[in-house]
Amino acid sequence: MQTSQLGNSDLQITPVGFGAWAIGGGDWSFAWGPQDDTESVAAIHEALDLGVNWIDTAPVYGLGHSEEVVGKALAGRASRPLIFTKCGRVWDETRAIGKRLKAASIREECEASLRRLGVDTIDLYQVHWPEPDEDVEEGWTELARLQQEGKVRWIGVSNFSVSQMKRAAAIAPITSLQPPYSMLRREVEAEILPYAREHGIGVIAYSPMASGLLTGTWTKERREALPEDDWRKHKNPLFQDPAFAHGVAVAEVLREVGAGHGATPAAVAIAWVLAHPAVTAAIVGARKPGQYADIAVAAGLRLTAADRDRIAHALTS
Image (tube, rainbow, N blue to C red; front, side, top):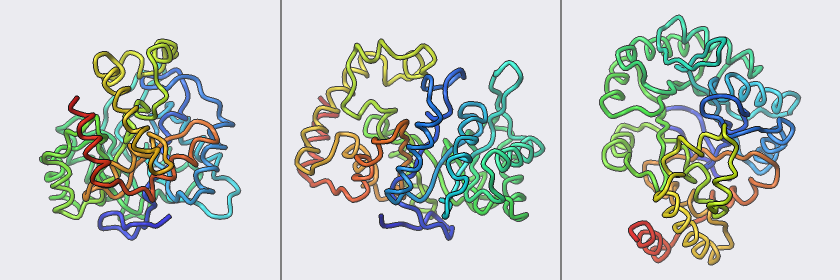
């Protein structure tokens, strides 16, 4: 795969990166249901063998488990991909998740992530959510300190507004922004993506397939059969009607568009996100081997004007 520079960094990243949210396993607030760690490791290996050169994870995914699985998958490999992780979400002995951006907490989180991942340095360290808002400056200042100390190479933000990015940038340069972005979630197009592009902030979009809704594999029966601890079943607005029915209909149009390129609906959805001039790359997860070969096609897929018109019509129908 070709690579692109991420923001102001020296990181050259592939158009898609492996997203490790779902492989955190079940039994936490935003789980995707039970997950087999052996299949997770195999899925990571498949993505890397296809040329993907970065993995995005977070401590809160599975309450530490996702980072542990990533560390296990990388142990013993001859070459290590770039590792991106986050801070700002903590949990207690009852598995309740809290929001914290205090300097001491971030430092503890960073050390814990380094141990779980089995690395000496994190390539990109990101504030997961700008919460509590009043602690954004304190948290970002601590990330800058960690960068100066060499514990992390580059620092970025996730889910930030323009005003919050301006506050952070006044303290230290922002390498990257990680926003939710798909053809079904386009709120960031108005102000956030233009700001990032204007200020040289790399954008790594998450949920480009709308949490899997745009894969073309969904029916009402499959949705109802989701495990109770799959966050999409009750917490994800896109999986509630009427949004769910609309997403399924859009995915069918993506199937038709993809047929002309030998690509799946998922690949078309990812390619649509990658086509935005502000977007550097997209985060795409997988839960078992055999899934990433189709996803990787998106890295080289170029949609035609006619394709985009068909998609635009489906989105407004």
